[in-house]
Image (tube, rainbow, N blue to C red; front, side, top):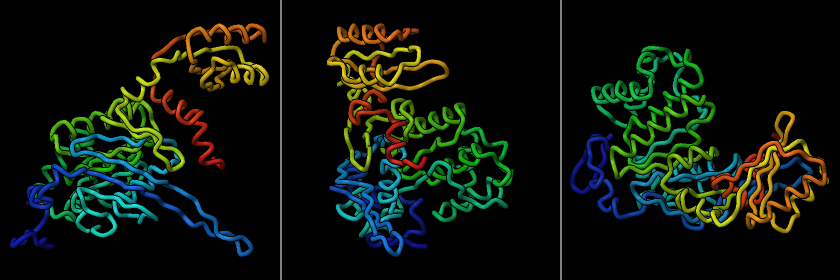
Length: 363
């Protein structure tokens, strides 16, 4: 396949400097959305009219070249829908999305030359092919010369700890190892803009840590690379991302650096109490205290954990008094620094887990 640029014809984009493809790419936003929306029409039965599901509402985001940008939100928040639009797999219902100044709807072919995407839990590849054969095949789709493709494959597999499985059929890999192969596939083409949709979904703690380290290393090696990561793991967003947009029910609720998002809560007092299981009347009384800003209860084996954001530290006396009057024992009390989970609770009014249940009531 040849690409015509100016007066030249090139065998593949892998041989081109990026400024030859998009001359002013480094001065344009890598990713930009303007009032972006997506509505799904869901057909009912013959007697029921079709209904609409709003997946995205007026999303306005700008990601600069070189950023590792995170979309943080519960399952069902609209993260995957947004990624599918940005990667030309889905058309928006309204608004527009640009990749390096290229409209994803009007110029999808040019956009695809600049990007790659990996989704967590996907089963891409062919089970009868080995790890190397699968990755080599994908490299050929992008016109990467065979020798260069094999060099990159060996290098990337070594980085993610998969080099010993290079000749293993992908069908014989565990879920975690198959996901590592998929991640290598995304990085193999050395895209200018990479989209990772829940890349550590289903991975154990060790594998997730390896993937995060690999992502950070890849970004640090080349300052012009851009990566958009979706996740519902708070630690992942906090550890990796230069900026984070918090999204829920299709709306972007806040966008800033993790430090700035948490700093906005530092004026409040945040406490974690481990107590004997309280009755519903006590929980209701705690939630309505005048000094209570946000309150989340999480039941554990034989105990309950109360996460509280108070308007001021003095309000803790009201909490302790309410628990004491109800004969609730305080087993542990900690004051702590804000986390992104606290930011989410402050914006939405309940925890990420509760938001996931709200977005997916059948789960």
